Image 1 (cartoon, rainbow, N blue to C red):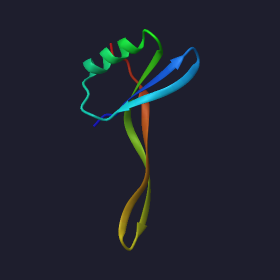
Image 2 (image 1 turned 30 degrees about the vertical axis):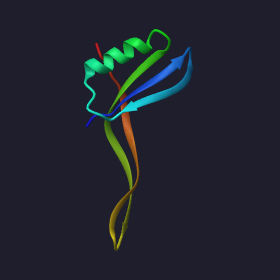
Image 3 (image 1 turned 120 degrees about the vertical axis):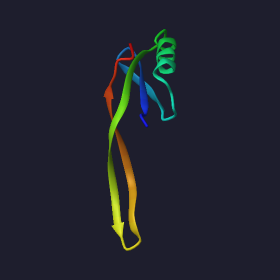
Image 4 (image 1 turned 90 degrees about the vertical axis):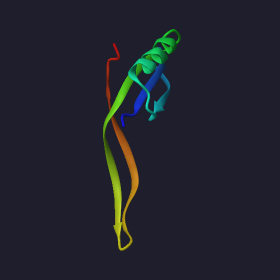
Length: 76
């Protein structure tokens, strides 16, 4: 499943980000970006991979940490 991230800026200052991992369609995401763009500069990214830190023990393998990798996308 693709996770989308919207980075919200006011000027050059990053105010925060919004991530959605639900079954959001690109059309719905485009509508959200259009609404936010009235007040903020919005950078739209999509996940394409992830890095994982794992632990192997006698109990098996356990994921300790995962970091999604994002790249910028164009919704038009």
